Amino acid sequence: MALSIRTRRLLKIIGGTVAGWVLAAFLTRLLVATDEAPLHVSITLAFGVIAGLLSVWFELRLVPRYLRRITAGRLLLVRTFFYTGMIALVVIILGGMIGVERAGVSLREVYRSQEFRAFLMSGRFLAIIVLFLGASFLINFVRQMSRMLGPGRLLGLFLGRYHHPVEEERLFMFLDLTSSTTLAERLGPLRFNAFKNDFFYDVAEPILATRGEIYQYVGDEVVVTWKVRNGKPTGDALRCFFLISEQIQARRERYLQRYGEAPAFKAGFHGGPVVTAEVGDIKRDIVHSGDAVNTAARIEAQCRSLGRRLLVSEHVLGWLAVPDGWRAVDLGLMPLRGKRAPVRLYGVEGEIEDAL
Image (cartoon, rainbow, N blue to C red; front, side, top):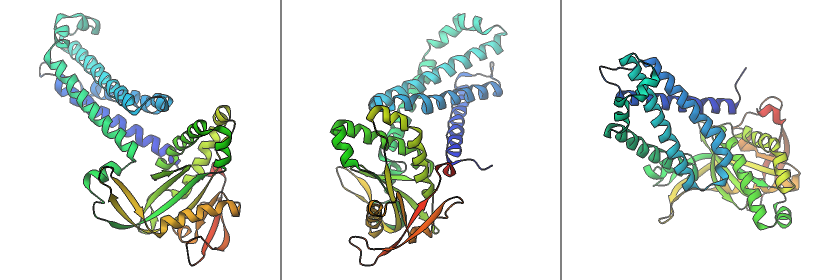
């Protein structure tokens, strides 16, 4: 049985995190072990795996619970000291295990010994903690900046990937809240902003899972893009919409309790050649410009008049294979504002369960 998109992404996160902690454990082993007191490889590996799994729990269970309640600066400090504390714990445990192997006494006796206390007060232990404190701060700072700018954007700006304009093929999805004006009047500006931010937060996971990039937020709309290589988007773009539907449906009760209404949304897909370039000086950004972006926005605007939640252009449908259980309904040629020639549109329908 094929694994779902979310399961594959979860396994990738777990595997990467555990591998990173195993590497950190072996690095710590090199720093604290000696020729007279080597530490068995299996013990080091076990502690690396345990630390990795604790980190996965911290990032996937604990952080999301409080992520929207704290500022980016506080989250950076929390992450920095959590991982530094984890490293300190690993050093203490591995140091204790070294003492057990060397002296042949119990772990409790090792921790009570003057030698171990001297190690904890030594400059060597302090140097290890300071080293990992700096590394943890730097790594988590880059992670948060990357998440704030969008995956790949920080590296792209740093390397100057789009310092000179580049022509490339991209697919765009304009995802827009339905009846947002009416909802804003009922909720008021502050509560509607909270409603909108909750929605943007909830759509992020399906977008990442399908390898999409959040290009920009425009009012109550989020614009998502996928690169097109060899005539095919790099991620599972069409499935993204149905994963978002499933995500919002799963959290429907929470929205109803908080706001009295759950989000309804619609989307339009289109793609083609665009020019991608780095712009600005004081505030730099990477922007996409071209007919493909404007046409995607016009297609999304047709959802209301056609009574459809998801519209896809004929050009894009040629890139995306419609999975079994879904169907694309030909709606004919439609005139779009600002375009001379009409565009053939398709309404895509499918069960949410099929997207899992």
